[in-house]
Image (tube, rainbow, N blue to C red):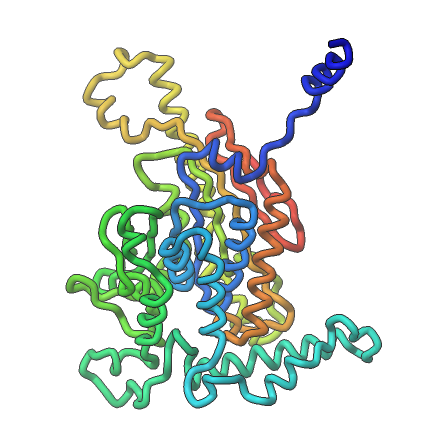
Length: 425
């Protein structure tokens, strides 16, 4: 008996283990959303982010995306969790190869250049190794971008035999440079739309109505979704044709708003929400020093879609809703006229929101064509960057704690090179 007592006392005094991000998320939030921005070839970064989430056992129940983010989201929502990373890998391995006569293999010169890691392991003895590595990566990016322009990408899009300038009949051939029939086949092969429409996991994809110019979200909670809804979300003009759905035509959601975060945060009925926002374009950047820098910076700003403005606006609205609820509680419901209370009811809310925001950071060798440089080397690099960034984020378990009911909203701006939250509230 006496020998057992110290063991019992030691067990009672042992420190309680900190919960993991997955345990915090599943135990603290009613909704866990993965929010994916558009950005073409940069979308492999999002695949790496999801791989890290899967490693940690943190599985979102809602995937929302625009353009390439919509394609990634559909693959994730349309597969069982244990198959998601494999399906993402299949998709990105497929589309990183050029279409056309060189579709079976990369041009031999690129294979040769890929095999010489000037700046990698074992290159320390090579003079100017780092500079040569940058030149190598720049060459691979440029040639893969040219290949995409001239031929397209396997399983994604292919160039049309005839120029659209030869037609004026409103057809797909007259209004776009590429045919996206390969993408439909890829989606039908890699995505189980029955699983999505059965409600196992929610999927929302953003597009723009060509006739009205308004953003529309196709949401599996509201309607059955198919390949056409995902293709519409990525139908960036003039490269790709508008997609007709129920008599209306749609373009890429990034034409108006490249980030579906506002849609997720405005969802009703409101619920305690963890939103993992993965952006592919950084609104912040250095002053351009050349015309290529100007083109790249312009694209970064255009497609970043002012994510921070959206989270700031959401914070102000949510604090207003919380203050309104507290005011009515203190005054008493009887002190507010019934008609006015009915009008205010949609604004009364005590839900909390945590936005963890990751942003892909461009590499020095990348140029304005980085979003259509689909080569295998760039794809693997983007994927690894997303994997590393999300692993670092998961190491900060405190980021996943929900804010208090008084605080209502917290935003963590996570950057790879300066890994601290820019703003916490």
